[in-house]
Every structure is written in C-alpha cells, then in structure tokens.
Image: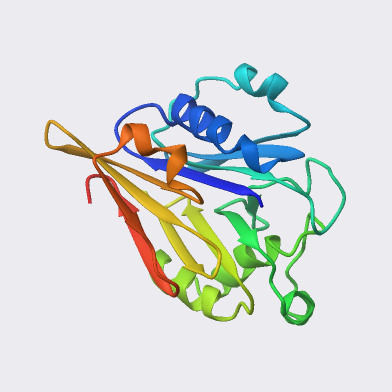
Length: 218
C-alpha cells in the first residue's frame, strides 16, 4: 500500500513531512512527493527511487502540506505519475490511496469537458472532479467529488486558497492526530497512526464515509 501524510500547524511542514514519510516507508514505494501551500500558491516536489534525495528537499517556508509514498499500480514509475497530483492550474493538490473502480468512465466525462491530464494515474481525476464543484466551499467540493468515486479510497486534498487540509475515506485507512502545545493545536493526517503517534496527544480513526477538515488551530 501507499502512504499518506499531512500536516497543519505553526511549524515548518517540510521536516515534519520528511519524518512522517520515513515512518511509512515500510509499506514499500517507488516514488515520493510533497505538496506545500505557500501563501496563495502550491509548490510540488516529487521524485522517483528511494529517499536518497529526500534530505535535499529545501526548507521551504510553509506550515501546511501533504506528502505521499507511491507504489505504482496504474501507470509507469515516473515523476509525472508520482503523488501529489494537481489540476491544470495547480490550484488543487491531492494525495490518494486506493483504486478508483470507475476511473475510465469519470476520466471520459472530464475529457469531454475539456479537462487536460498530465499523468497516467487514476488519482489525477480527483483534482479535476473537485474543480468541477468550485462554486462550493472547498470541503464541500471535496465531499461531492469523493461521492463520485467507486471503490476503496482515501483522499487528502489541499487548495491554494484554503488554509487547511480535507481528508475523506471509504475502505482505505485514514487517521487524524492532534497535538496541543501551550494552547496551540497542530494536526496530522496519515494512512497509519504510527507515522505521527510520537508527536500527538490524541488520535482519531476516521470511519468509512467520514470527512475531516483540519484548519489552522481548528
């Protein structure tokens, strides 16, 4: 299985995401990546192979991000196919575990609406589905997009204009961690609580068809 790890808080997200990914590497992987919110933009960093170049990841000034270790199931091992994935204008960023059983049907619908794709993965369609609901607040757009997916899936999404993360699951595991430090809370979300258990005061295992919204101190 692949690994999901996300962070929202007051500290630099990059070293926290690095540490979380390393704790998920027991699952096996062939590529890895980060999606970091920097003011009103999203920066993507990803690579193939082992974590040899992970420590070279720059200490970017961001306290909100998602990361992923991928084990290829759809599409070749490449940077394009590594997570996170974004929509065409890089405003929406997603990491995902699972298999979207109706992927081809959904992709055909999106192609007919002039969406353009950059990878061979099923994951990328989630970004475009969320974009289809852009008239809604971001958590609601994620909820509506997720309801269109068939199969066992877990998704964590990031938007350039939303100061938080949205996670939702059905079948594939997703866990929230909370750390209260002198009245300021930090939030973690991962596919395995072992990725953040040392950092947290409280762990919440999401049930199927539950959605979590993790914002700064809320």
